[in-house]
Length: 101
Ligand code: HEM
Image (cartoon, rainbow, N blue to C red):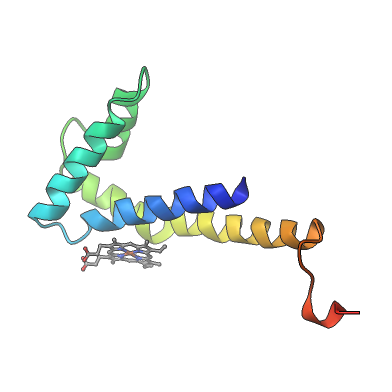
């Protein structure tokens, strides 16, 4: 489950990073991506507005995505990697090299 979380966070890095060049391709890809998020039943419009920082894509979206891309998601990724490695050792799927006996 933690590994699936890592995958989803990595997809989040791709999604937020793609807006950062702030060119036409980035703008329209993120317009489409956030519109898809807006189609989730019930909570879609709230998610869409939270992602965009308003009703439409703007400089606010860019600063949100930048913050998410350079520290929020990497911080979550770092934590999830730590938990993932911890559980690998705890569950005995692997062990430290010096404990080979
Ligand atoms: C899993 C790791 C990462 C993924 C999947 C990822 C993904 C992306 C993608 C797809 C872009 C758009 C590139 C383009 O179209 O030119 C991008 C841009 C960018 N990323 Fe990341 N990124 C990752 C890690 C990082 C990290 C660790 C940083 C810095 C702390 C970072 C900073 C940036 C910046 C500043 C840009 C804008 C570059 C530009 O506008 O030319 N990224 N990222």
